[in-house]
View 1 (spheres, helix red, strand yellow):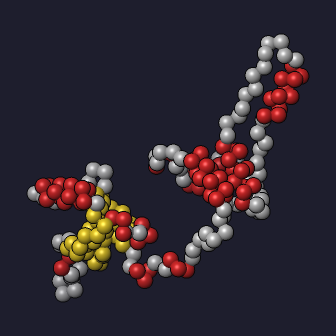
View 2 (cartoon, helix red, strand yellow; view 1 turned 120 degrees about the horizontal axis):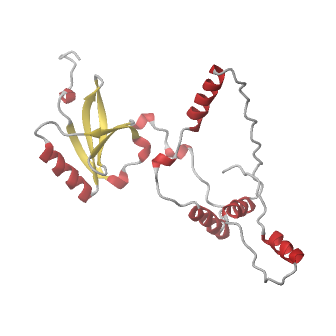
View 3 (spheres, one colour; view 1 turned 180 degrees about the vertical axis):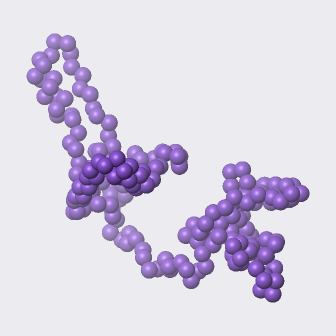
Length: 210
């Protein structure tokens, strides 16, 4: 970068201010980087990391990367500082351009939706999420190389949502484990089969999410 146009942040990061972490909407976060200290800067780095972790503040700074000055957000990660380049306000669509109309929500619908959410709760483990598109593309290319026929996957038909309560109930039903009917040793086999069939959950159709 020519010296005449090089900003002050060409060599040194300049912290502008600190803000509450809850005030930072993730929609403004662009690319993410791990930020490591320079030689001799380990203690100031550790001090900044621990201070921001305890106070729950994020830092707003300016730094030069890729021959351009960026506004960045600094936050304490699990073991060190994380840096995010930031979208400017004119690059983010305003929240009032879309909104959820909550006027017609009923208590029963909300309670059922909460049950569905709770049935899907799990630990965040990034390694269990795979790029299936890339894997399928790799398999398709390999099949072409080996001279095998590539069969197009049929398009899945998604039924339209008619009744949100019915859709939620069906989704919950799909999450329930199969029930097992217990009968006495002397019970009639036909009666046992009928009981098991009675409690077997029906398979729900897929519904389009709202």
